[in-house]
Amino acid sequence: MMPHRRPSETMIRTLSKPGISLLLMITALSAAAQNVEHWTADSQGCKLVAHRAIAAGSTTWTGACPNGLAEGPGRVNLSVGGQVRVLYEGNLRSGQPSGPGRLSDPSGTGYEGEVLNGRFHGPGVLRSGVASLRGNFVDGVLDGPCVQIQPGSHRYDGECRSSRPEGVGRVQYANGDVYSGPIRFWLPHGEGHYLWAERSVSGGQSAFNGTFVDGKPSGHGIYQFAGGGAYEGTFDNGLPSGIGQLRTANEFSYDGPFEAGLPIKPELLKRNGTPVADRRFFEALRARIPAAFQSVAFMTPPRPYQKAGQVCSAMQPLAMPANTRMTAMARFFATALVIDGRVVHVDINSDTAPEDRPNRKAVMTSIRATMLDTYRCEGTVVIEHEFQVAPG
Image (spheres, rainbow, N blue to C red):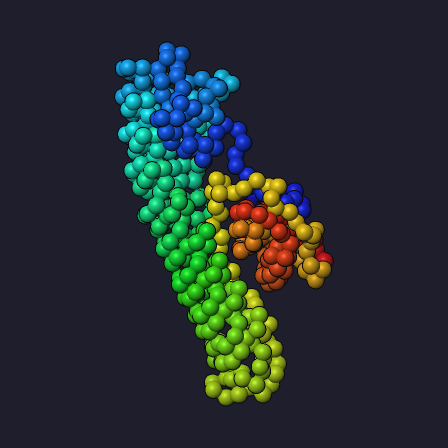
């Protein structure tokens, strides 16, 4: 569950401001030797590569210095205002980090692995706090097999492109859900399989096999319900839409059109192959369907991929719909992923009393619709918002 925040507070996560960010640290070791802006010297006149953003500070090299260039194993301290911002321990060749090395800053962000001419090159692991990205780096970028661990969010084993999960992989989410298939911008995208962790009374689990678009079932797919039964047909934005076949655990069936996740022709409902004349069975089926389809979990992108807050604004005040009711005070935590100005995914956690669980999914549906209709953003951002619902 996301940490508690003040009521109605909207927050955009940004790059860490103190010290040097992970991206700047990468740049600090990637300078070209021929660009004099990227060279610095310590108090003894020993030259080595450093980023120009910290050239105004001080550099300390502990190691050999033949011909005026840092050489061999040693330690580099890059300081600003008397405080060490970047520490590198490893091998240098002609003033540039090359060979096995370890890079870190006071926040716990760093890299450990092979370096070539100041760039991550070879097997290594990039860390930011408790999060990590492991794989084989080429010229500072991880392209190929990788493992990304983001505690509280996910573990990803699969392909990476431009140092982020992209391609085919397997995601183990913090809530226990598992997805296997293509990933794009941290979301299921393409033909994949999703298994929900939550089990029914009988021990079954919901599962989806089919096409995802921006993290939601879209196109043809098969959704198996935890309590038995299944739907096969077309999906749009995570819900049945178009022609489909629905089978329930209690022997009801419906073959026909769906709109916004619901069957629309009562005359097509059957039980054991016999048409059902009583419309109340059809209405009861429609009432149960929305809660049966669960939403896909959310991979939280690491901070270097999140932009500054001023590019995102709410078009209207966020408020709970008037028809939401709870027996006790409840909090709902919504996280939205915005890519290229479009909200593509909303994930919601809740802190509700056990007696309010039947109402929880209906409230979540209302929140999700509100988030999708509210924000207009630029770039790629993550929005967090808390809703509080009073008893009523």
